[in-house]
Image (cartoon, rainbow, N blue to C red):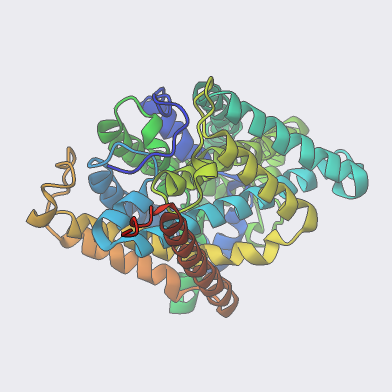
Length: 448
């Protein structure tokens, strides 16, 4: 059992159901990118694009199955950090937790800036100066306050924003299917290995985010059953939504590969100006939902590290009334705000390729490791077990490594630097703990 630094004996409040966790997952996967990525994918593989979504969805399902099995063994906050720590030790676990928090906070800063740019289309003043700073401060402060106020309130906001982003997409898909010109979806071009790899890398990042589903497990009413349900439901749902959105966009919009705003441009053709506005509002709501989810899951990762004494106890304090990790929420939000205002998030976000490798591989390898008999006494028995023995986890590790193979030199460099920074932070915290323990040692009494 993890050592607790909680200031409240009852700990975090368990209030999240299976659909709350599913909303968190869908919210984190479907962001502003879904409104832009169809053009980039079509530029690489043409009419193969909808099929490419399905194939990458299936590969993501392999990883999600591993998360589901290993997640069904744990009840505490932390997700893949806990899994890797239990299977491979404290340093490996810390690196997973650190990289997850690092990518959440940089993604939060990126999304906040994306909202400012999207609103700038209608209100140019918010793209710079005091107006931009005020918008970023207000957005992050409001979402942080909601998160501090309670997990139930945070879940309501995430649920509402998830529905709000799905409604425009649903209208776009359902209406758009009647306007699809099948001639635009053929012929299927020949695709080079380089093009296939580029499209796969784009889509692997588009499907990223489901790994945060088990992070707030300590606030779930039945995490060992709800986490597997939410993971698998999320992957199936987002695969269907994104593949259909690509199908409609490609079947309606001429010159898809060259469009800068493909979904909005396609909506304009069959829904008119109102449809394009609906998609624009949907993209803003989508990024706002991402921001809310980043604060929720990022702060819980920071809390989990502190709960297990990998970070100072300050980050593990629970609000005595609202039973939320208030310090972790405020700190995560302040860091994201600083990155958003300075613009320094742009280069740091390149670490996400390595972060995904570490997180995915850690969870998938932990699935195999924790099946061993020697863990039976220290880890719960899985309530969800993948069939076919080691086949799925091994394939999932291969998929995880493939993500790294497609990373750019900059992504590798920034990701490696973030890993080194995490290792230094781990060693510094360890040394600080040892010095503190030594200072508390009562010296032996001297003989007279």
